[in-house]
Amino acid sequence: MSKIKIVIAGCSGRMGKALLEGVLQSDDLVLHAALEHEGNAALGKDAGEFAGKACGVKIGADVAAALKGADVLIDFTRPEGTLHHLEVCQQQGVNIVIGTTGFNAQQKAQLGVAAQKIGVVFAPNMSVGVNLTFKLLETASKVLSHGYDIEIVEAHHRHKVDAPSGTALGMGEVIAKTLGRDLSKCAVYGREGVTGERDPSTIGFATVRGGDIVGDHTVMFAGIGERIEITHKASSRATFALGALRAARFLKSNPSGMYDMQDVLSLK
Image 1 (cartoon, one colour):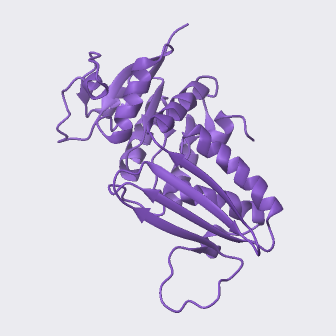
Image 2: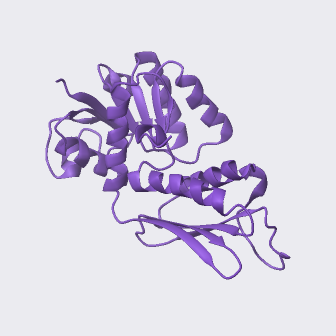
Image 3: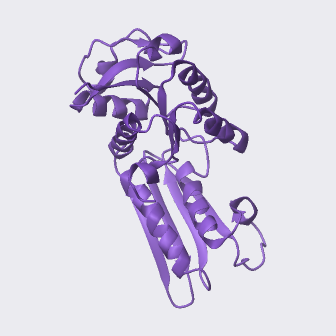
């Protein structure tokens, strides 16, 4: 059976390194190309060096050249870069796994348009455990729909540039959808001063940034006399990489359409 040819964008970053390790250690995937942006110090180096093992694939910045003959691009970069990569993927018929966060509504719509031509797996978090947590939150929201205040607390490393995290927002979206609410109208992203009593229809978010925290997320359903907490803690980026590689395998038999990790894991 032929191996799935993978291209990794942002290969010298934290997630890029984890993805490289995952691909190089797999039996059914092969590193087809590795990308970094113009001016990056990693250009021209062997991509395998970032995973502790030379592999013969040199890091480049030419997206079109990198995608030629590839099966799947895996992208955990920034929205602007991802959208450029997405455009080239459409032109060349290459499927894409997107773990990038921070997209606005208009940018997300562009992903949907691309999915009419190629397979797109887009998820705020590729972790298998987090996506199981999404399913648990859906169930909890149905049972705890009345009399419980909902708060989401997330913590990440000092280098993360967006807040709240895409995962925290994804959790909020799952809960809001289950409760028949619009997250854009019921979310509260910060509290300071005399705020008045809590509106029971809101979903609160709190953000922590510090050190090397990979990713902690807790959703609290706070009622009278009890509090239910659903927590996921990531101790290594390997969990996100393994989920992304699972998504790449999923696209082998699902060549077009818009998917998320719930589809990949058959949780829908």
